[in-house]
Image (cartoon, rainbow, N blue to C red):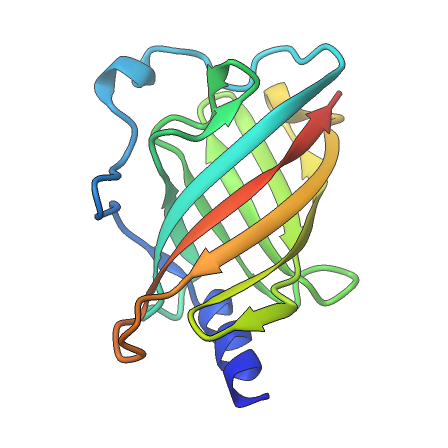
Length: 161
């Protein structure tokens, strides 16, 4: 139970920075591409973030390798959010992208020693993401050393407009 409270607290106080372990912010080549353009039907979405969990402000960066269908998702984008901002009490992230925003809610209900996971769903969108619906699975992985306050999030699923 203590770990679940810690995980919920840690995820709620996400502060982002560039990734490590070989992953970083999107490359300049991806910067010119238009992520999240018109979506026809259902498409796969993959959102990777790196979170430094030492800040009170819930913010972070979208990592290179995030995608919406065959296009990059939210190149050089950021996210913000927190705990209890949703009607169901789940955590939320609003991804700020050049072509709009996408807000999702997620519940890290399945806790393990160095990770937490659970469902996520789209709450709302603006711009290219307006009218988007979808859901999937979320996981955050923590380092083995509990004193290192960082995590790597991965959201997988499908979305449609």
